[in-house]
Amino acid sequence: MKQTNSPKVLQGTVGEGLEQRGITRREFLKFCTALTAMLALPPSMASVMAEAIAKARRQSVIWLSFQECTGCTESITRSHSPTLETLIFDLISLDYHHTLQAASAEAAELARTQAMQENAGKYLLVVDGSIPMGDPGYSTIAGISNYDMLIETAKGAAAIVAVGTCATYGGLPKADPNPTGAVAVSDIIKDKPIINVPGCPPIPVVMTGVLAHFLTFGSIPELDDLGRPKSFYGETIHDRCYRRPFYDQGKFAQTFDDEAARMGWCLFKLGCKGPVTYNACATTKWNDGTSFPIQSGHGCIGCSEPNFWDAGPLYKALSMPVSATASMLGAAAVAGAAAGVAITWHNRSTKASAKAAHEKVTPQELLREDK
Amino acid sequence: MNHLDLLTFARGDALNWALILFAAGVVLRLFEIFGLGRKADLAKPRTNSPGSGWRTVFTRSLPPQGLLNREPVTYVGGYVFHLGLFATILFFAPHIEFFDDLFGISWPNLPSALVDASAVAAIVALCVLLAHRITNPVKRMLSGFGDYLAWALTLLPLLTGYLSFHHLLFEYTLMLSLHLFSVELLLVLLPFTKLFHTFSVFISRWYNGDIFGRKGTAS
Image (cartoon, rainbow over all chains, first blue to last red; front, side, top):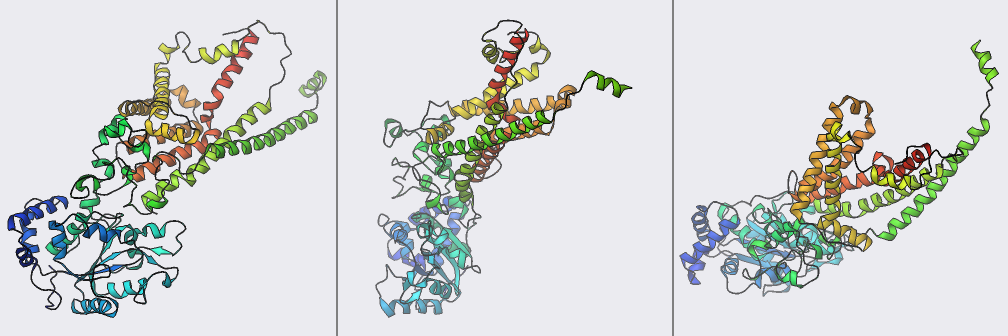
């Protein structure tokens, strides 16, 4: 397990911190059991995880926010309070986060460089927001371009967690025509393990799950080919959706909030992108397990998928064309007709010239040939 | 390019071009066929049989007496395949959404399980018909590359559609893209292969019925 030793930045273990905050071991074990289940680990790992996290020193975390809307930070910090998730989150050592930290200006930047030096090779780097490559001036922090700051901070990181669809895949800033030349973290950093936690915003428990995995095993969880933890992004929203049986039966809501939608019928026709979206919304849900978009009557917009913003209109069913129209077909038919007329003219003239060139043969000529 | 990008391309530019080539190709072929014309038949008709062409359009849908017993695989297989294909294309809810978006018309869908069964029936029928085509000496002799191409072009959308519906073989987004690509390949090649019978079948039936009527074998 990767442990940090700097007394300046990291004080006490997570277990001690939990004790101080009055979290009982029973509650903590319950939390770890839920986490192991979500991470698709065997149940026996719950106590191992609890032990490891409790003993772990507070993990130094540097959080960089680039071209983003702060929705990811809102998602993780503004969940109902207090939950064990947020407490666990409190109990890491969040050394730099320019939205949350009290320090400003030079003191803020000093906190980052200090944490980088004191925990070199050990700190976790969390990034939300995309990086503009068009012009460094599009987004800077303390006069440092996002690109330079990412390169500098990534050097000493043990691993990088790209949080939100902007950091993982470019997100909204990258949407066509991508005015800032936005790219994802993985487009720039190639020599560090990167965990992608996409979503707009991502689910808070996914974030804590990834951190718990790192604290327990000192390694990153198993990832899919898009760099996402398989335990959270292994199945589509559609596969785990409570409206799924209605899809299978071919029962669909026709408009938002109609009788069918209220009865739980499938929102496919209203443009739900659940069938092509890999995320845990349908199982973990949002706001302390209260609900998720589909449950509230709106289709999934596919926010955790790369380039979801350019993947066709949000309210068109997946089986609908992105841009084809009947008038386009009409124009093609007219062009076909024109080509047809040209071919007909060609065929007819070939026929006419063959007819003109045809020489009549008399029976006498045939008889002569026979002889 | 990730799978969602591939799907967006399949639903977007690829589909647009396939539809353009399909529409232009179909109209072009119809012009070509009608434009070629037929020589005026100056002979006096042997029988006066008005409507023989139109009747043939319908009567050819039924097997002539005795042929069903002699060629059960061809007839039963043909019916099962075509009906299964029509049910799958026209009554699967996502397909109706496609037509609704393009032409602004929609109709009630069948339960997905029923459409699924139709697709399976069509796939099985296609396989049986291929086996029969290969094992039957007459059919084998009559078959050329175009026949096998038409078979493959028809099977692919059915097969990829079935696999994507059941989340088999590949990841769903990729499989759905492959399904769309297979449909697009079918659309592009349909006007220029034997699959053009989709549009020409009733025209040629009418012509055959009419000409045979004039020659004394009215239907």
